[in-house]
Length: 385
Image (cartoon, rainbow, N blue to C red; front, side):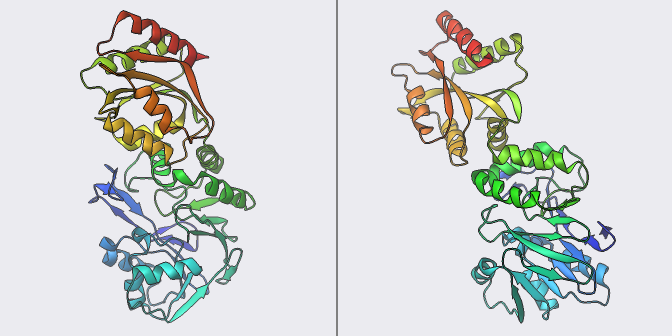
């Protein structure tokens, strides 16, 4: 097993069988379900793993402990990819003290029938647990992204066990950029709860953190300001990258033509970055992350059944339910006899905070025409300001 520090071991697993995480997010490079052991006078196991990896995980524990038995199992998060093996663990180590908060134990009762917990320790915000030379402090993180979530901080090795925060898609035996898959993970799964993430980041700022051990993704050891800074930007709904994201749907190619022309004009004018996506053909979660990443968004879509095209409607709902805000939005609409996409789009964002609409709306009547080129020029000029 991998030593993280002299006393902390990684005992997690990689999953390359999973195709969709949480039944919706494509994970071509699999997932990691992370679990840790702290070896001291007392032994603490931090979280379990997905239910498909029971034998491997229990084997990892045995490999680290040998003849010793764990004293505590700390449940930072009750989602099944992290808690599914709690009963199996207690069947093997029945005297272990289960550490959680009041909401943790309520969820244990919800998830498991006839759970035999001989010993439990209910902790509150700021409570400490001494293992010997290691002392853990519990930091509550409600709604990041479930109500029972808590972190723990080891003041000896200065390690933050951060539950799902700072996690990412992808197994640990695959090399890939952290930010790309962490961003997609964050906005897909945690993005609605920016205010709660901001609150826990303020708590974390008071801690001397040298390492972050999340429940998904790699252990973060270097340049922690980079990861903390991105989380602050994401949870504050700020602009990570200057540029424009163009999201479009197109039935017969005219809306696509307009979207691609806008991209070309923006690039010709020196826009730092222009990203574009056909929502019917590209990963929706990646489009959502790009909409949050850049400061400006262009929505190009058709009127459809007196509404808007279904993929675009799905996209906008994904944004608004994640509290999309602080952005500039432009619209390219298309309609053959009664264009109303712009009206529908604006209505869908009416409860969103700090949305600035461009003065120019490109309105296509069926086919893309010369007059639309002038509108595209005007929209590009506005977006460059």
